[in-house]
Length: 79
Image (cartoon, rainbow, N blue to C red; front, side, top):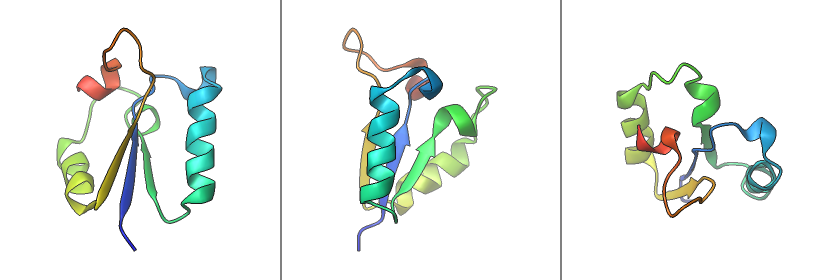
């Protein structure tokens, strides 16, 4: 089976119904998928670039999950 990586770039999923539901449903439907919530992994905003690059390299399928506003990415996804 393909290694599926889901990268969540929502800045605060505690205040989101839609995006949190999407991640919950993905976790249920794809229990073997790796879900990386950047807001939980890096609450201080200091990213481990090597770890993120390794996750991306290991994935067969990458799903970018974030709120779409003004045709741009949230700040977490820009780092």
